[in-house]
Image (cartoon, rainbow, N blue to C red; front, top):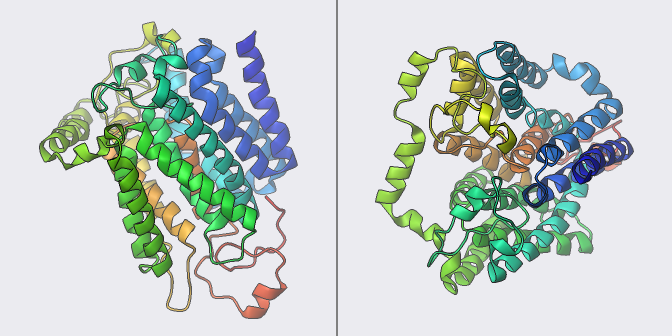
Length: 456
């Protein structure tokens, strides 16, 4: 009964809030994603497993009713056409009875369900982005509180030992055998990755040049420090690598903005000092071990990728790839996993060479449009960071799995990607006149008037 109640509450609450305001529905869905891990671990039920999927279903249904463009116009745009192709190909493959039908449906859901969030992100304006940022700041602080509690009392204080938490309890490679910290998420990687992906919203909320309310600035500051604390606390190395890479891309795109450079140095200095005080916060220092990093890189990159493409040109069947999140109650139907810890290997084994080429084509098309300012223009730092973070997430997908299936990280990443192609933000580098800026009641993030739209 509890599983049914939570599943229904997720879809109904998200749907109703989305009808009221799109940003509220997005915030509600992300909230379900934040607490999905700890709920799923403590309430073993098929419906709690798909609770976040239910929240996204409510978001999609509400957005479809609220946003006229999603009813047809979006599919005539390049972004909509790419999403259509990326959805239809695995849909066709799911009809081929290679594996158990339930396994193939789970693999299909893992391939496309979070991807659809990109269309929702394209409907958000600056007002909506800031609204989501306020709620994420609160969630980050709450997550940090849970993380500190687990740091003090251990993973067993909040998580039971069962099939869902097996990986969490095996992750005891911090300092002298301490656990990595999952906070309210299922894994430490989900915790650290989600904290990192929330930072563009914190930047939009309180760190842009445009005047922001004092309470927004303090809220953004709290959310930022909670996110950085979570990245250090979780014990996962990938979020640290992504933070360094995406930060570098951001500095380049923002032309080494002096304010950003100073803020980055201050944050790095504080984070380094805090980490130096406790060995349990220093697991990312193992990245300096070149031999260990090389072995991990080789294992994840999968040197047999070409052999897999030759052996499975049409894929091994939906659900056959390593990294496909098969729920514990369907494990008896799951085939032996093929491939390595590599997101593109997972796509290739599940969807064949055609599916992988579609994804590569989409990503090349998407990231070729760089938000780099013209001589007289400027691009907000949070847009640069959203671009850098999305780009680096896909770059590191060659050496890890979960880019399209992490909860709620994958959905937030696609939300950021959608924001970069928003109908309100897509004309970022168009120079507008001072009169246009003054006359527009709601101004787009890049200084481009977003006329005639409803507040997000």
